[in-house]
Length: 417
Image (tube, rainbow, N blue to C red; front, side, top):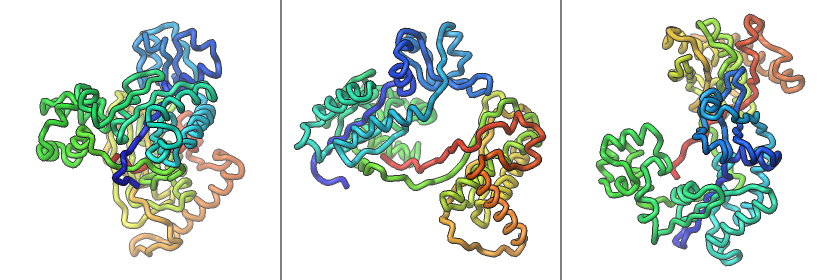
């Protein structure tokens, strides 16, 4: 818990994490322009991380492999090895945990550490940052950039300012000098849409945001406007979570970019059924049911849409989830352009109490049958693998349904930092 004592928060970021781990494992990659990227043939062809030599060619994370190759024809693409990245990032975070029990993960490569109670053992925040940085390099072979501040927002901002292997202190005595001249989108929580809205208001720097009227920002941007005003002024007192603390799951979902475009509703239906089974399985594993079904889709023109429906009775039944998702898609999309990717998520979650309210206008026998079918299929899949049992309709076009639905996509609440 936050008290009146002086807080010291570090934000540690493993520099270009995936690419750096590949360089550590294969040192020859340090001598060439290299990026970690997906498989272009299966249409997951985007840049996930790049090394410093690739950065010189202005390769950007998130751009397609094709775009990256146009900038740098000799760019070497390395396929991602997520188990290895998780392994090494945990070794790094094990070092963090030796300096505090308050270590909050932010993705695979970043973490906040509250070292307020550790200064008597290890020195001030800068001393602890140097110790961590030195140990991570010596024991794991990776560089980390670290921000040192009195809150989480400025600690993260500091870790972004000097890369690789930098340490930046943003304190109460210097945050206006360091943070305020920076572009507005360098402030945590200011994404592209918020940046554009702020620019329309004539606000382009963190300092301009801090010096604006808090009430005016709330008027223009709602609660988010007021929140980022507090951030810009250094008013953020949220705690760093205890190590191992789990966020409450807000929604459970899964999405896929298919190997070929979905040309019509029948194509999409096949994919929706696989996704629905995956989502229903995870809901059961977590003991959850949800009342809002959302289907999201992206066209071949890279335009994204989503629609959702709230249902009367919480569900974890794949048939119900698939049917609702399919109806949402049919009502809201006309296939003017083919679909490139599609996803399903279930939110407004409730704990499964082992019983449900009987509905007057739905057959409880059919519902019970579908629920038992889900459980039986899940048991078979857990023992023998996902594709050992599947619906006959999924054999219609294997190029659409030949993907791994066991890759989980779980959305946690955003929270206020």
